[in-house]
Length: 475
Image (cartoon, rainbow, N blue to C red; front, side, top):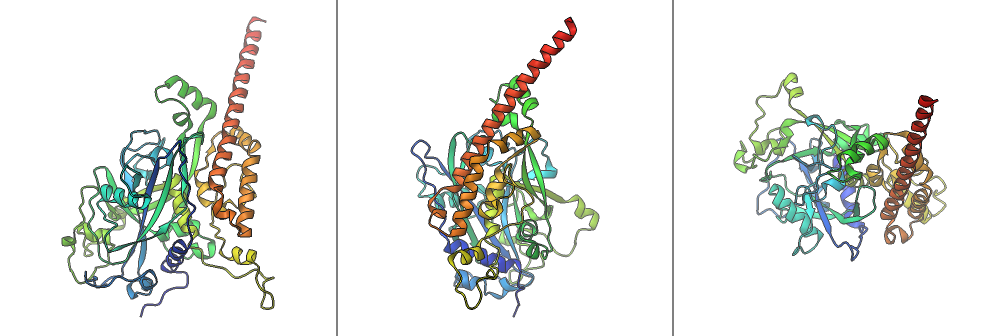
């Protein structure tokens, strides 16, 4: 029987999915002034090891506990993956409604200034809730079916649960646009399933190991074979702060304010791990119906064989570099935070002393390894209470803008510290209070004040410079 490694990716995935199933999500009610909502599907599968026998349609499906006890799941060669999409032609400034760009311009998942094929941006399948949808779960399933042809209502899938709701606002957080609900799905069978992406949509199955190496604590992430690295995405601030057709105003704002930088994870994947919209994964592409060759499922769906591996030179030519950032990175960090296994109790809670609720809560308090902090977040455990927020707060290219954000960010820091205290105390306020929304609002309030001060100081500096130049010329 296959033995599972202590810190294997499958074990970490089991820890995450059980936590998601047993932890109620933070639900944000839509205000009467803005009832729009959206939902996305985070789809996870475990690629079986070679020569795994396919499951018959009549075979009873396992429960979540039984799934992680299956031999092909516990096998050391099993590889957990999650699904990401690359949508062609999407841009952060796009406002065309629809499935592909319903909220891309507000989540930071579209193309940005200076992006190219070497750094394509990816997101989860999903979109806006439409009239007639029975809820967020239905929206996520419907949008996934319409966008990639994958039916999450089939018996092969189980909905594990929901991550916390999150607010999508305008670029400076001044106006709420919609509430986004992420739902987590798991494929219970090793069989490859047919898919049919829409035009302009490419599917990427990304090994969870690549993310674990970048965000999980060193004693776990360093053991992962697949590696990814942190990068950044630069977004033109003028494109988000000025009207689309105001060309002169855009140039002026670009010069005065600069650009915004968001953290990103750079995923380096082979091209053969992608499924373009022209492919319609079919079970007929399988060379043998009874067993799998040493390939991932998406390669089988495209009809690849294992008889002719790529040479090193060919492998370098056929790799994709994908950037995971914005709200999609935030949801991914929330998922990865649930994978951190419990640690030992603090030393005061020994055998002769009962652990306090605070001690017990500290054991389960996740803490990702994030190489960045939002402006003004120094000294705060933002990685423990809200790793997703740290990924959507920008830094500006001009240092004085970041300085003024820090100056006006006192209220934001108080909110985060209150959130941290609530998490450590384990009180009811952790779920009852919309900490993430409050932190988001207070941070962007500081950004608006900082930008106003910077613009005023820039204007005064230009005026003084012109006056001095005039005095020097005429004197």
